[in-house]
Length: 90
Image 1 (cartoon, rainbow, N blue to C red):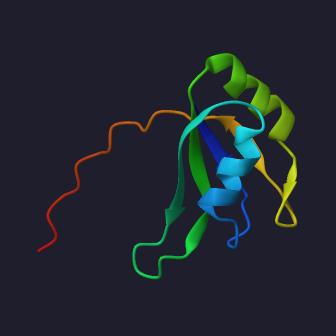
Image 2 (cartoon, rainbow, N blue to C red; image 1 turned 120 degrees about the vertical axis):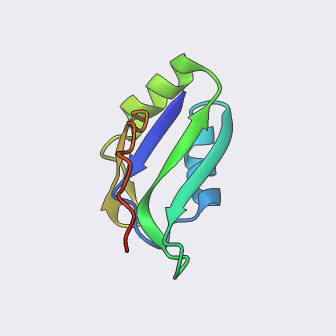
């Protein structure tokens, strides 16, 4: 199950998220979203957990939890919608 994690401090690392969520079950992947130019965290990321029950428990336990001095938002990740095709820029 894919989990959205928001309101992260820019200093939080993927390893810290891995450790935080691993306390609630098996984590298959962690990805922080970063600015493509500066490589700085955008303050949110995604955690993929193997079992739905563990993911639901992690969401319940960690939503509002303080990490890096900020209360994080944790919920089920929504799939990206279809992106509208942009017009060519001439």
